[in-house]
Structure formats: structure tokens, C-alpha cells
Length: 152
Image (cartoon, rainbow, N blue to C red):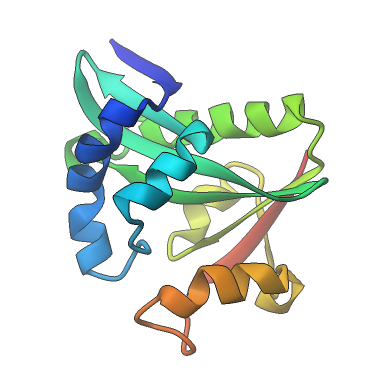
């Protein structure tokens, strides 16, 4: 049975191991152990028994704007609603904080569109997103990620 729960500091090593192939391929931005630890409360994890099979973070940008980032699901569990359930949990968390919009940058726009997100121009994203995160990407400034947003 798959369980969804908030991350703990002891999960960081497993989180880094799960995301490593996507970081190496440039699909997900690298995050240091210290950065994950600092933001540990923003992560929701999926476990099958004690095995970490996926996670994502809800990063707050402003009073009414958050971002879903670093969504990763183990290859063996893709297509089994694990990613959708993680995103839904993060959307519920955003709603509970009275956040009105959640955005994401992704190469898999259809996945997010199926969850009610719509494409927007990247220029609508907060400037701090570009300078805090995107500048770390090996694809910057030539980025082909798609920006999507959902109203809550």
C-alpha cells in the first residue's frame, strides 16, 4: 500500500538517490543536501512499504503563489497515479494555506494539464524564480521547459 507523508531529515539520502538520474540528464535541477534540509517541510514523499518511490515540493513564492517542483517518481511506479497523488496532496496543502495559484516548470506538460494546469508564458513567472533556480540549470538560458499554472 502506498503512503504519502511529509519528508524527514533522514529521508534526504534516499531522496538524492531517487532523483540522481533525472538530475544527471538535466530534467530536474540539482539540490544540495543542505538545500533540501532547509526546505524539508516543503516535501511530500510517497512510500511503498519503506521504499521511497516518489516526491515533490511545494515552494512558496508569495502570499498567493506557490510552485510545485522537483517531482520525481521511480520508473517502476510511473503511470500508477503516484505522481498525480503527490501533486494533489501539494495542491491541498496550498489550499490550506489559502494560496490561490500554483505553477510549475516541466518537460511533461500533459501530465500537469490532466491535473487542471494551463500553459502560460514563462515571462509571467516571478523574476526571483529565474535568478534563484533557473540560473543553476545546465540548459539556462536556452530553456524548453513549459510553464503551467493552476488557480485554486
